[in-house]
Image 1: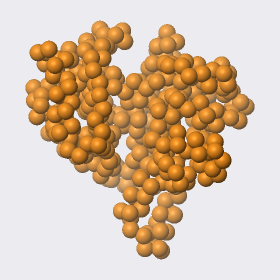
Image 2: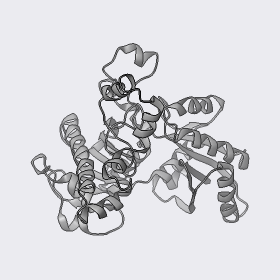
Image 3: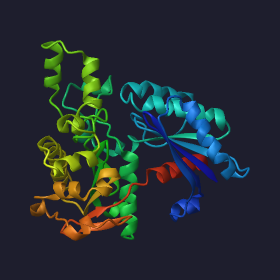
Image 4: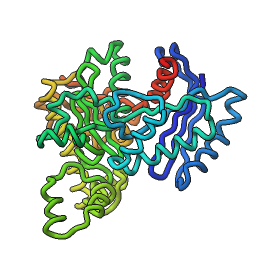
Length: 376
């Protein structure tokens, strides 16, 4: 069965075509037929046309049975959903909470539906994995009516990645995710840490929106809400402009004064740029704090795992985060950490082992789509 996976970014479209079955999914033998990235996207319908021009010859007359769409904010949806009018409306209404992502996902869905109207279109939500968080972890300490009436709560994101990494790590041990407590650091342009206890997300660093938590490429992460209210009420700052600043002009980009790309910032820091060094230190320090918090939340862990672009590729950032955690049972092996090897691998054989495990978001979306098709 052919499953197309679409991941619409703010100005890009990633796509991947899989051949899979329930048996293939269970045995990790799904076949990637083709994948691609279209950048500088202005009109999603044009990007989809380009993608289908590439994919059509590879289909050899076969139909695409399902299209899995990555959707960043799914509110309280507990899992992947076949997209009907009600689901489409819900995604649209949640666009206010993920304005850089949900509208693009909807645009990709509508364009893809025009190309393959008979396929089953499925929304796979980044928030769904975190619906297992207990109320004491997801509720803010504000009057209950804001949760009950306005749905103001911590939702968490990167759930597709965290779920795939927890499953992959367990399979590498020949066991089930239910056998482990793991802390996963998804570090890319967007960053989050997740505490996964026996296969269930019990806490994560992102909150009501993807802004909360770690220092990120261009997002501020945690900040005292009173500071923003002060700027609005006392200093006359425009709320919309502040929201734009916090999401697009903050984080590594702001404090380094160089870039939101960790590679550029590390290069500058290595050349003696003090602002760049401060940015790297702030990034690592914030992640270190969340690791300590989640060790406390789960009363320990069976592994610390790094994933995503920075987590998988930057030995320097991993070393900066793990430095000084030896008293908590976490220490890197310098040689293993610096080795440029592909795939999942241990990089620290301490009391709490440290691993790099590449994220498998695309195939996870394909498998969720397959599951929705078979459960209809």
